[in-house]
Image 1 (tube, rainbow, N blue to C red):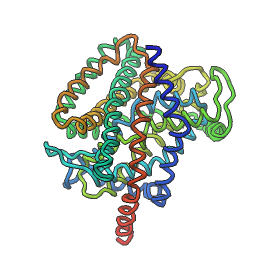
Image 2: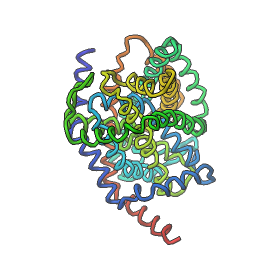
Image 3: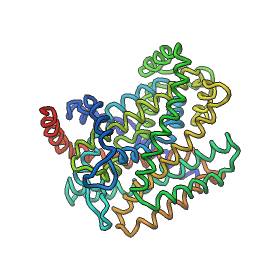
Image 4: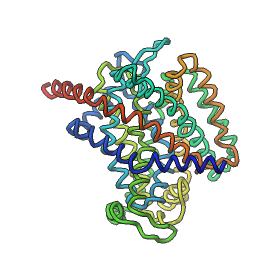
Length: 451
């Protein structure tokens, strides 16, 4: 096993090396300027489309609002709590700056992904709308590129069992045991049972559950974080000063913090940012392809909000709470660091309960969201007959992530590696199909700006 982990670690260092970070950031910058900053300039327009998208009678399976909530259900997860803390632990305060940078350019990436997903989606044998990178590669680039779509589907299918299942159940069970004394396997079976009930109804039930649960859990977690930031407002200038300074300068060792290089700040900031908001991975457009809309651009403006909400709002709350409470130098890492920060910032020890409950809600919605992504990747490879077997396997695997002896570090390593392998074919497709998006965006906003 050690040899296998060592091999995966070698692959991870390659796929998350300078070339990948350059590809992610470079693609985001190219799309941002190719779109003439539409995603950033049309942020409020996107929120208006989201509000209007609560109801729709256009073709599709779920409302545009629930499509975003489904995408957010998969992105708002352990990355917002444990991932941000890990970035700070290994990359120092400067990692937050690079997380923001990749999120800002990632809005354009997410916009383009959703536009292409709706533009090149299909209707399967069951009458459901299906799409995502594998379909816009096949239908947008042509049959000769189908191998690239299949490559994405394989990596997406495998990644779903890591990032979307075992990591989530392991993180929840660990939090429930440390906070409430619940045995991990009990937590695993409870999660599996609840997920099974949701999966019975397919994307429509997933969308309905996400549409109700995601706004609640985001408000619950962000509200607790804002209370801490307001009560520690005098420390915010210092926190921002450290973030911007260490974004371009190495972080010296201090307290329980081992120090970090400039490269570590960039690497962990960008990698954890992408892990959290998934811009460029190609996962979110699978959900947006099911939206009840006939206009790809309109759904693109809704989709780009996912990156903004996930990283600029929720991840920032976690990072700033860790900074203003001063625990970033404590030597803690992952979810325990976030729990320590909230516990320090909130009176009466309520912080650990907020983080544990928030982590449980975030992870549960991530599991149901990623179940849909994994299912559609599997369907692309093996057809509609694979849907039910996939759902059964998905539910069975959830408790396995709670078994004793599971190495969370190794799970994160595998998930990180598969995420990068997913991103490569998707980013290639985005670059090749970018003229399609640019043309659709120009035509759409030329018409709407006249109205």
